[in-house]
Length: 221
Image (cartoon, rainbow, N blue to C red; front, side, top):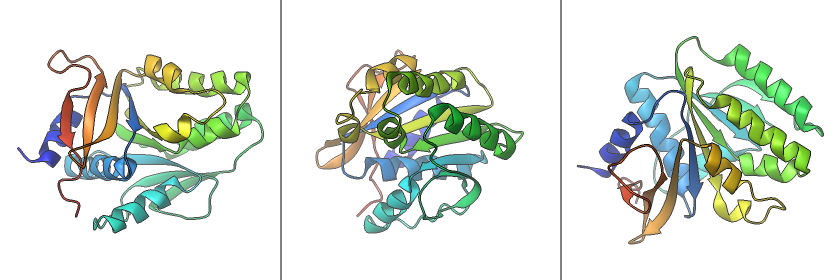
């Protein structure tokens, strides 16, 4: 079975209401995973929404171009927080507020207005930048609390894709808290000089921690 098909098979196994944490430990893992989820949504006819925090989606698109993958995200609905590069179909814009509570309220309202009536896939890119911006303990738990709100909400499935090396530099590392919240945790690591999707936590009994699910870069040059 081709690597892409293996990834799609894995995505078929997740449930609406799941919160999936994707910890990227590789050079282009965020870009490859975002592309494959967007492509999966197109093939399945499921709307895809991206939270683009501080131009993270622009970085993803440029990395894909470098890898020889043509992806403009034109069919993806985007809620944009800060930044200046508009990628995809931007349906809402939110400024970076100095107060986490105000930002989260604005985000809830924007998503409520923009989200479709049918089920959808929701990808969040750059959340580590928000944790860097909102550094107090109070704001930290407000941020993780907002993620908990998504858990069990069957209107969508949530993917949080973050850069593990960036997160490790933060005053408070959110990964332990996020791993506890998430129904599934996967990591993207370099194995055999390729980007591998590796299982870390989840409800399935067929695979265990450290097992490779698939290579993400089967079509990359």
